[in-house]
Length: 295
Image (cartoon, rainbow, N blue to C red; front, top):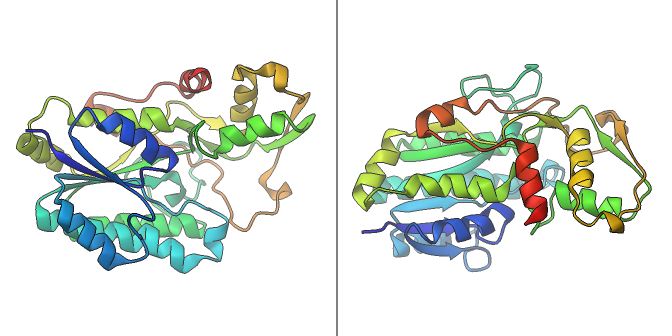
């Protein structure tokens, strides 16, 4: 029997791709606001208990990094209270929770990619609430998988890639920070690799198999890139270069931009634990970007 899968946040850039990727692996109930109000925990609880899923994919997150500095309560509700409740409900129902987190739980000062056991120290409110959400899930003690990812983008939703494409059509000169380094991750490949875990397992065996692998994993595109390098590749791989007016992409420092939230400088992730555990990994970020631009 195929598992019953509840996908929350199916209209976001990752959620939209998960909705597609999960359909061949079970019975999928995909919901998002306003069908479910994530600021109403009772409504969220009633929804989950009525559906009684075997697996919950939580692709809901408050990701507005700068606005989170002032919209603290909203960010906490969505990034902390919601995941904590989902973990409790999953444990109560004997379900598995799959939750997504971020490289922004780190301060970016290590000087090389972070492993799961490295010290967390978020430097902005978004990272702090995502870390609190991780802890809320872990403290429940049920079966969960937390996937920290980095620099997620989609061509279907507003993202760094779509912004660069837009700027390249509006400005002859573009300045991009070269001191913020991460792992560009195509939302489609992130969705597909986390859906593939459901293959070749019957429902009860699957839940047990996932439960045995409970924990935090880093899962992002292979290789590192600064925002500057990433932007140059976006422009290079643009299939509609005839629409570009950009003539130069200039490197800049974070301090040159007045943002409400500080960003970590090198928050790239070492994803070897995921590969060792599940036997698969995301491809090189440039190869993925080429495919995304051509899709």
